[in-house]
Length: 422
Image (cartoon, rainbow, N blue to C red; front, side):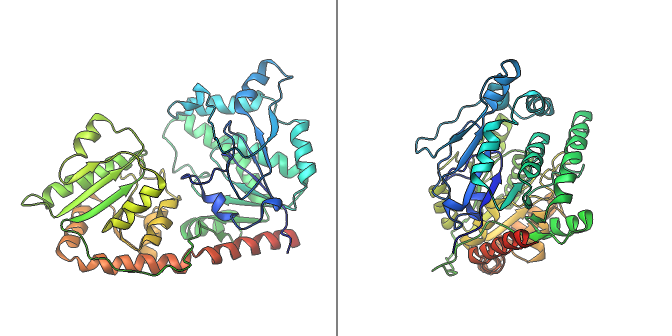
């Protein structure tokens, strides 16, 4: 049966076998002839799920400020030699000043082009799918495409891009978030359906926008997969695979300090940290002792291997005041990967943020929200290794119940058809 045509409007191109794969996971079974993507980076796509792309080049957008005849948008094709073209302005560390610079480029640059309109007319979507971002320009682009095509649209929010709780406490941050909210409110209010990433976000957005939101997460393919218990290592082997940003590195240092006391009379528990981030000198010092070791970055294939060989998979968010709410409503794709691995999960983060709320709601992980709790829970693991099997199985069954790929595909398909019907 021919699927309805779906146009997705996002920031990044779709590239298979990378960590940025949630949207690829959502539409992996939709059919490439019924799917198209408008995106805004200077990288070429490389995916098997889609072959219709329109790229708005940010580098050319900057050029168009002074040279209005520059062609900023064009149809592009899959490339098996993906290359990244970065502007130095955007390659630097994120700051609110750089965010404003980017917003200014999009405010002045020429992106409402005939080439974009021709692409929309030629593809002629039945429904639009808009991931929500913490940027004004993307909200403006999505609102423009919705108004031009006059097609129903679904929004997908996977983070706290609306409240003031998750931003820096600076005047520029408040102004930027106020600006974002103005455009995002229209986007969310006029949407046929709001899809969100976690139960906590659903509860907040149901009340905020007076709609029954739908939870949609990255699906896990459980075909031919079953839970298998593996006897733990001696000492217990913990693994963290991820970033050190927004306070996560500091939380890992708190775990390291707790391990120093636990391992005082002999190493009982270890932590290997795999990250593509470059640690600071203080992080290198703190995370290469007490049974911890920084291993550097590894491929996705190697990530799965080390996760499968671990006894405990560590999930962390920032605990410090400045960062504790940065991931307030986020739900990392790492969580579904951890659940599928069927390993005991040790999750650390501020009480009430979406990931910790999720793990506690379904009792799918051992959680801690303070330095004292970290040491207490790790000590319990060392003294009662039966918890490893107990929570490994709970994690696996939680993933099977709430994130099965076939079930998530049905949720998305039903939502799209209902949007069109209405």
